[in-house]
Every structure is written in C-alpha cells, then in structure tokens.
Length: 494
Image 1 (spheres, helix red, strand yellow):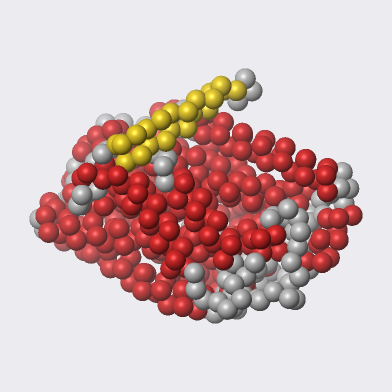
Image 2 (tube, rainbow, N blue to C red):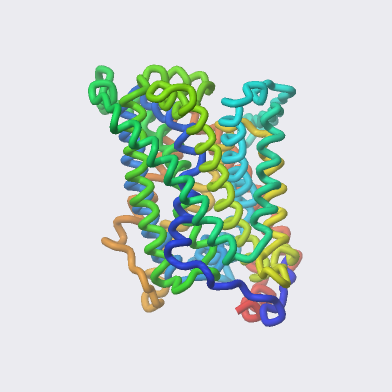
C-alpha cells in the first residue's frame, strides 16, 4: 500500500490552466444541482423566507474558510489539496502522516458521495420530463446496532432514475479521460451554460418581483430561541453543501499557471460571485413562488423542482421545460468539475507512498492520473443507490469532522511551527477567519435536529480509519511504531 513510483520516471502533469479556467471550474463545481434542489429544504429548516439568513451566514463562513484554503494553496501549490496541507501542517513523518491518511480514507466516502449527490439530483430533474423515472423498483434499509455508536442505518433505493445517475457517472469518466488543456476548454463551455441558466432565472425574477411575497416573514421569524438556532444549523447544512467546491482549484495545484497568485484569486473570486448569485436567485424565487409551497415540498422531500415551477408561473410550461434542461446541464457541469478535482487527490497520496501504488499511474500520452479517475467514478456510481438527502447530510458531517476543522485550525498551527514559510497569500485579519470558520463548522455539527445520526457515521468512519492506519503502521514499522520507513518515503518522494 505504501509502495512508490519514481517521480523522475513518470510523466508530469501540465501547468495549462490559467486564472479564467480555474475560476470557471470552481464556479461550476460550486453551482451544481445543489441550489436548485436544496432551496425547499433550507426554507423548511427555518420555516419561512428568513431562510435567506442561512445563505448569508453560510457565505460568510465560506469566505472565512476560503481564506484558509487560499493561504495553504498558494504556499503549497501541488496536487492533492488538503492531503498535502494536513501532511505538512502536522509533520510528514509523524502525526501528519496519520492525519493525511485519515483524510484520504474519508475521501473514499465523501468524494464519491459528493459526485453521486449531483448525479442523483440530475436524475431527479430528468424525472420532470419522464415521471416514470421516480418509480421505485426496490428499496432496503440496513440496520446495524453498535453498543458504542448506537444504531446505524443506511437506506438503499433503486428507481428507474438510478440508471440515469449511474450512466452520468460513467459518461463523465469518458469525458475526463483526456489531456488537461482540452478539459480547460470544456470547462469554459460548461460555464457558459451555467451562467446562462442563472442569468435567465435572475432576470425573470427581477422583472416579476413581488417584494411583499418575497419578504412575507411569519410571526417571530427572527426570535432568538433554540428552535431558531437549530433551524439555522439545519439550513446551513444545505448551504454548506451548496457553497462547497471553492477548494476544488487547490486539488489541481500542479496544473495551475502561476499558482501563488491564481489559486487565491480563483478561489476568493468564485466564492464572492457565487454567493451573490445564490442570494439573488433565492430572493427572486421567493418573490414568485410562495414560501409555504416550498415548505411543504421540503417537509415531504418531494416536488423539489422549484425552479421549474418558478418558470412555469412566469412564462408557461415551455419555459419550465427549458429551465429544467438547463438545470440538468448545470448539474452535469458540477459533476464534471468534482470528478476532475477529486481524482487528483489519491494520485498525490500514492506518489507520497501513503496510498495504493496504482493510483500514482499517469497516462503515458495524455498525462493525467487515469487509475484514480476511473476508481473514483466507479465508486460514485455505486453511491447513486443512496437517497439524496442521506448522501448530502453524511457528506457534510464527514468532511467537517475529518477535514475542514483540522485544516482550519491547522493553518494556525502551521503559522506557529513555520513562521518563515513563503506565503504568496496571507490570510486577511489573521487568525479571525480561521477561528470563525471553525466555530461555524462546530455550529453546523451540533446545532441541528437529530444531529447524532450523521455524527455517528462520521465517528465510525474515523475509528475504522484509525484501526486500518495503526495495523498498517505496525506491519510497515511506520509512525508511531517506527519512523524509518516513513522518513525514507518522504526523502524518496520529495
């Protein structure tokens, strides 16, 4: 598992992606199917149009955490993103080896979950055209009782739309099986479709704006209570899911031109632009579709095609059909970007000797990590059999516990341990953004109704990863049982 390839004998990646392509990839990664299907869920969590607060607070925390990614990405501009950062922050020969392994371990679940959620959402919108896609063919709930973790339950469901979701995964693998410079041009084409969809929605909303309906707050909407805080926490779960993707450019560090400047710029620009677009879209939808209708849809977890309803009320059925097609385009663009970025992370870990050797293989002609790409896509296809809401909640909680919290606090650790490290971008108002991002993540974890459910899953994944690491470290005489092999691996890979 810790065998290494000789970096001098392997083809290298191409720095062929400039600021424009990097920013567009980040944006289409962030604007996937998420905001088009989660809006009723956010409204349901907060009980009215005050759900806009979830998007606003979510944007603030995204910008704070974005500065964490920007500083680390500019200082360590290589493939792998968080894997590379966590390894260096906590010590590549000691605790950092464990933390970076746990990151790759959780990525084996969270990355395919992220891609699968986009595919499931895409198939759900396709059901607007073909309602038979929603017909349930089979479903099963697996229950496991663990005395130290409680009851774990995973539901699998097979609909006719499941085959569409799986097919989208496989088709994305086929599209990405080529040189990065060609992918940069494809991302620009996909970005045009994404911006066209959002532009039309905002234009339609602004030209048919009903302020009284958009801001029809129920009594006590902003009363500070436990119910309000748990509602805000529940709304921020979906807001976090919709904003995440801003770190995608960091996973492509070896393929970005002038990464010290372009990584922070692409990252922060994409957050600012997407946050503005999300807020405008939500206000426009609330001004046309009564929030009580969305509340019912969110509570029943059905009829989530708010944007199709929105267009139908303004222009008629033809517009609903067109916008549904555009949402499907947008969802596919996000799946494309996600699979591209995440496929580089196991590749970086394998080159470092901390993952299976096969994942370090680079295509001899097109020079991309093809084994990592195919493995990620096939796993995502398997996760397409999960329910959408389960996939989103599990994804967010797993990442917060095993990745985002330790990375945000890790930036402060790195500043203390290596104050003279070259930093082309330095976080503004340090350390406030890192601490604010950490506080936001803790709030999302525990200030929700039934928060224990997803936390149990994350803890089980974490403990299993620890067990696998320590068994592997004991067999290979690595830290904490011995550091000689680990040190040798670091020297050979560096």
